[in-house]
Amino acid sequence: LGKALAYYVIVINCSEGLDFRSMGRMFSGFAQSGAWGCFDEFNRINIEVLSVVAQQILSILAALAAKKKFFTFEGVVIRLVSTCGVFITMNPGYAGRTELPDNLKSMFRPISMMVPDSKLISEITLFGEGFRDTRNLANKCYTLFNLCKQQLSKQDHYEFGLRGLVALLRYAGKKRRQHSNLPEEQVLLLSMKDMNVAKLTSDDLPLFNGVCKDLFPNVHVPVVDYDVLLKAIQDEMRKLKLQPVEVALTKVIQLYETKNSRHSTVILGQPGSAKSSTWKLLKGAMNSLHQRGIAGYEQVQEFVINPKSVSLAELYGEYNLNTNEWADGILSNVMRKVCADEQPNEKWV
Image 1 (tube, rainbow, N blue to C red):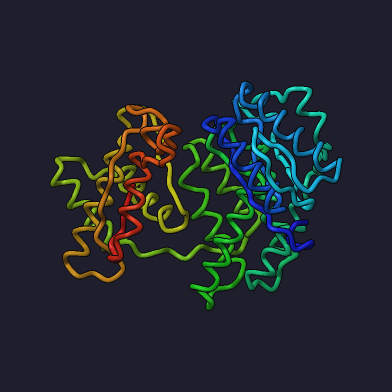
Image 2 (image 1 turned 135 degrees about the vertical axis):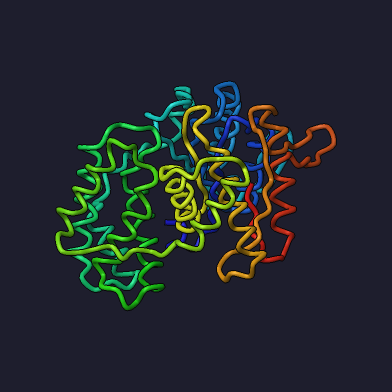
């Protein structure tokens, strides 16, 4: 809507770290610039802060209703541009969310969003990614995710909703551009397996493969040759006095594939299930292949952080209210260092 009306829209991702002073500065900026502010996940903010925020919003709305050009906000007289607006989004059913106070609820007009048409969104996304048989392929993608939601076990890390579906279609488009000689159904099936196989439990994997076989009965996924990487992983395992068993090798290869297909990766498992060993083996194998001059493998530099040992402020950084200065946390400091390094090496945080 903001784009259609040519209004400047700023989206703020809310968290427990927002206080009433930070919110007040934002509201002041919106009022003076005439911009729209969209507070995403507004009900993440602490209830104590929301009570003060209600008064801040009330003063802006009252000034707008009175059609004032200037008004007093937080003890300071500031300019008011009539186009300013405040919007919030929230997911009431999510864990760790706060119930909005009644006085704050009354200031906003609620709009409930209907469930989007995943099939139509899939069809349009595939069309935008360069596929031709979009209706048939979109129907198969929608059916796969629907059956996975119904038949597979309930795991916290499973994502078979619209977000996961769109991520799959975007990845399929990337694969299509890389392998333009392959049939569309083959590209889509390959993308489905790349995006989902690594996260499935051993009990769910046969069910997922069965669904894929039913949806794509005459399509076979091309086998990717990982012989060079497998040999390097086995050498690395022997160096660390580990047994190169099939399941361990498979998990390292799956991590490599997941790393190439997603922006970030989560390795889940019980204590002692070789989570750290998996990424260390892949790092060692890639470094070994890079040193040997094998194309496609870059040097890996890792930055290990233990977030449980520090507070949120120490991890991400915080705004010092006494000095009005931002102090980087461990993660933000590492990210600045990583982004400033222009070498083609891979940086793993």
